[in-house]
Length: 208
Image (cartoon, rainbow, N blue to C red; front, side, top):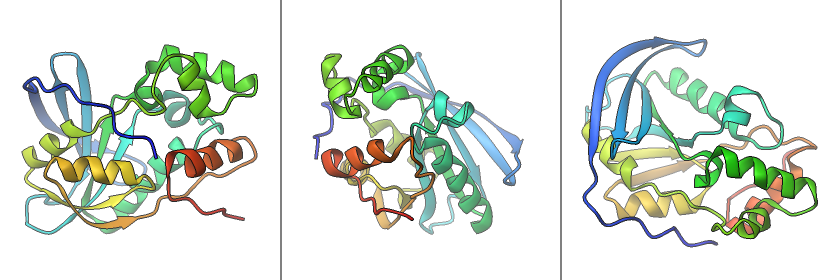
């Protein structure tokens, strides 16, 4: 399993914006924005009272323009986003942190460069390495700050990625339960998902 990238030790500057209503096809959410170091705007979409002391059903979702917006079948991101919002709406309480870490942290431009290499036969890990990046450049320290700002530090985390649990635990968040989030397997992303399981340690099981 790849190690988490070393995070910058400088003091984090995090500014929260106002809370606004966000009615969606899944349900009536609220949204607030956290600006990190005057450069990245992360979103928290949530429902219910998050500060009542109970563990919060939570999804940390990294931005994926191709999957979330365009419905790409190369990944499972858009399917996971929809499933997580649906689960929170069904629960009536929970939070989705939408983190601006496109392409596992390499950015949209380099993500499409990696796609091109994958078209030529490399898997998602080797494509990132060929471009000079780690397999996963994301970090999750800011997520802990966002959660605590909203009044909670115990979560039921919807994820297949143990590294995500390890990271937020190091930053003071208690994961009381992990809920799998396996959706969207298809013939275009079969190899991608197998690589995540075999080379990145994601907890995935084949779905017929």
